[in-house]
Image (cartoon, rainbow, N blue to C red; front, side):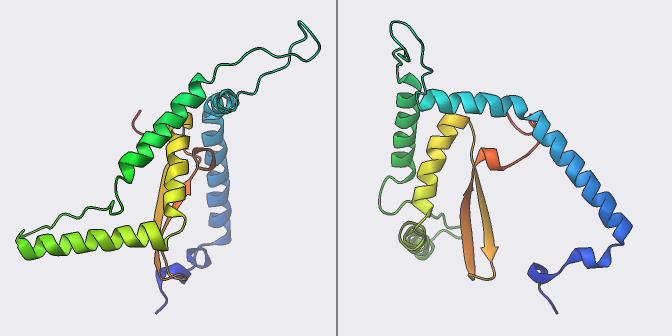
Length: 177
């Protein structure tokens, strides 16, 4: 019996139905993309402000520019730095809570699991802390950022990946604000 990871559901669907599904998916994707066009424009402005991209002006000499104050960049960097320190306060940053009967043995087991998970994420997974650090910067600048967690049958382990807000298309205005 084949696992769900290698099952192609499209093989069991009629060709006309596949075309209808594809047309609907493309139409809804384009609608979702259009609904967030204003946010994308604002996000581009935020990045330009963060990077202090000043446009040249011609007074008092050719291609001179105005003085820029790095208030946004300083605020974003402070948020990122403080978030990182809060998220990873010590070497062991994962805390586990025993469920059920919380005796001494369960508490010790939870502590061992927390230490092992901290080792897996902080040492074995070379990208976890780097991605979280990038995520804190993006959350401060863009207002949101995402994480995708899934089990990879190829790697035989759980994968945690960062997904940039610009790379995830959802209808604008959906969900909590």
